[in-house]
Image 1 (tube, rainbow, N blue to C red):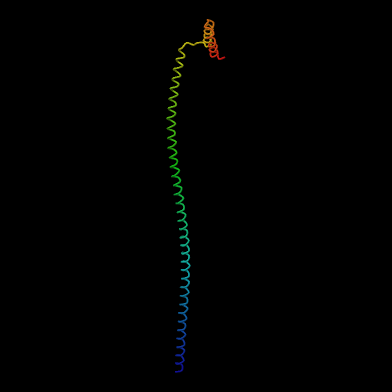
Image 2: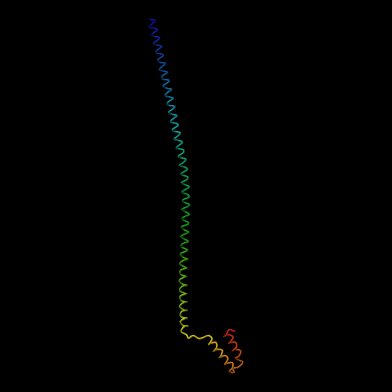
Length: 174
């Protein structure tokens, strides 16, 4: 009976040891699970943090690009307005230059017409002069001087003498 009792006690001790071993095993298993879960949570947090950082960086980059785009659009709008203004000025200036050119063209045509008329008049005058007999200037002056001298010598006298001298001076350029 003592042996059975001893074996029962040993069996109870073994069962207790087995229970303690199972508890210890369960505790180790729980600790391992908790450690694995903690490690997994840490990895997830790191991944999440990494993605949040990337997202924040991309969001900031997107905002910078949006601001750059807005600035570029404003500049482009300013440049477009400037180009439109320059184009309007160029159009206005070209219209003014065209009007001035047209005015100049009309004036030039009128001047050419006037000069043509003057040339025609001079040609007609030249033709009229060329058909007249050529009088030698020296012969004409001499004939006038003789006529004056004869009239002075003819006795018309002193009355005509002063006038005759004046006429001679005028004609000869003395």
